Amino acid sequence: MARFPKPPEGSWTEHYPQLGTAPVSYEDSIDPEHYEVERKAVFKRAWLNVGRVERIPRKGSYFTKELKVANTSIIVVRTGSGEVKAYHNICRHRGNKLVWNDMPLAETSGVCRQFTCKYHAWRYDLDGNLAFVQQEGEFFDLDKSRYGLVGVHCDVWEGFIFVNFALAPEQTLRDFLGPMITNLEGYPFDRMTSRWHYQSEVKANWKLYMDAFQEFYHAPVLHANQSPTAYSKAAAEAGFEAPHYRIEGPHRLVSTSGIRAWEMADEMRKPIEDICQSGLFGPWDGPDLGEMPEGLNPAKCDPWGLDSFQLFPNFVILFWGQGWYLTYHYWPTSYNTHVFEGTVYFPQPRTPRERIAQELAAVSFKEYGLQDANTLEATQSMIESRVLDDFLLCDQEVLIRHLHQETAAWVEDYRSKTAEV
Image (cartoon, rainbow, N blue to C red; front, side, top):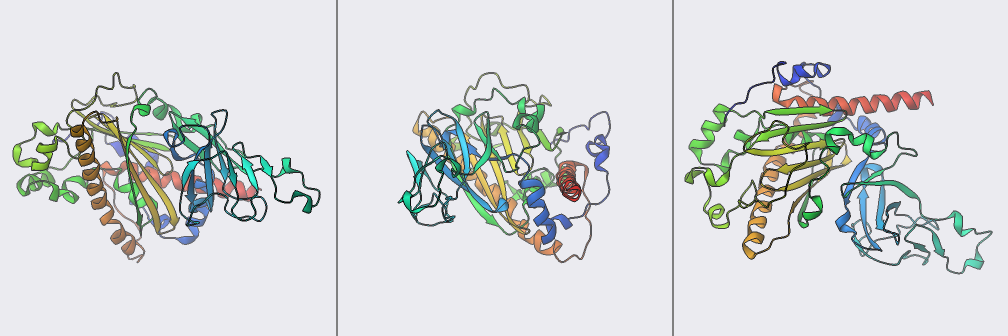
């Protein structure tokens, strides 16, 4: 794996002097009290992606999302006018969870004309209005217009549905995303409807898993078993550096060159990859997606491998040069646990071979994700020992510095504003 030159301004970390170069503390990943403030300062103020519009394709389509980090469950629905709206998943009568199936804490989806509470049959229309009260005459001075569902701020960008739990969001969604993200407009997300999804409960702080996907310093070592021994040893000794990092506002990007799998030496490929013409980098026969948006491949790599856009706080969109993309979500459940979600998106397969090629890519990527997750619980257990107070980061780990500093800045801003109140 070749090394790439640093930018003329110097190293990547020094290119962002506000980040510093000193060792970093992981106290923000092991302190329960910090986590409780982080929930309010970050996850109840930032725009959070909760899914895509393809999940609610027509009037009455809905899905629920359990968000323990915000201490709530929400309903996302397509209204009669075609608008996407979100509500807290709670009945105004006695507080029962409004939409659920057999297991109250399990997420669900479907299509309906209205939402009916399982407890006393109060009904709400798709716009959240209270439409029916069982034995309405038994209530005192009931004005149904005052008791609709509690709304959640909701907006859509390029088919991605975002919510914000602040009483009044400090920025519009578009302003929050900023140019680095909005320059991705025009990518054919709507054509990527062949979807695979998996999730896992991880016993580690959510930021630690995000850190794992913000650098490639680990790749030749942690993923060595995926390659022949001789190649893995050489790769680990040579190391690998991505040719482009970028930080803009609260968001981050790492972009890297690629490798055409079919051009690799025969001993570096698995037989199943040759049979299916697919693997970690995706199906070898990449689709013609047309002209790509200007925000992709900023380093102009040829061949281009991938761009990983890290949207603050917990959402990642990763584009592969082979013509597909995936998303990651990291949903905190406590200071040292979270739920990791990975979803891969391809164009609809046209033949059985294309379908198999997509499945192999999805399974391969899941295997790599499990390898990345495998170290996290070991990391969490030892940093909680507090044997060490801070940890060294190399130049390639510049985005890790930014995530932890950005989170700390949101916490400090929240503390300052609440102290003023």
